[in-house]
Length: 136
Image 1 (cartoon, one colour):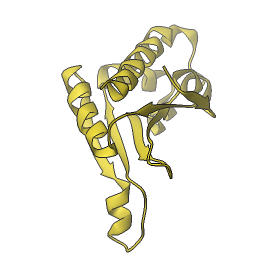
Image 2 (cartoon, one colour; image 1 turned 60 degrees about the vertical axis):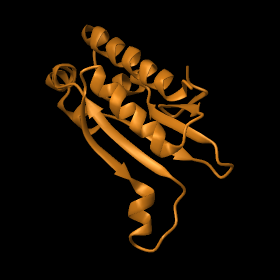
Image 3 (cartoon, one colour; image 1 turned 180 degrees about the horizontal axis):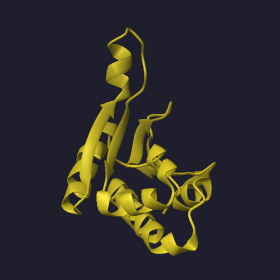
Image 4 (cartoon, one colour; image 1 turned 90 degrees about the horizontal axis):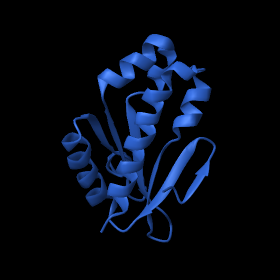
């Protein structure tokens, strides 16, 4: 699904605006039973201090039943949980969705193979999030 993967992040293109993309993903992750913890509009925050930034929004969401199991093994993964997606507009007006790669998270936090099911669940969920971002 990703258009490109680099340095532990996956990025895919979307036909939606940044705001509409995040609106859609809020509805999507909530419908899948995940909790939305925060939505951060970086462009609005930049404007509030007199700076310009192309549309950029961060959505923070997760499922404590999955994240807690991983934190019980390596508590420091809490630095990267809950999950996050960044929707952003590039200099050409294209909108992209970027999120952490699950294998990168596993390697970064030295998670053993006994957590492969939880990590596979994250990978599957994030792929579905990316598909929701790119659908019509």
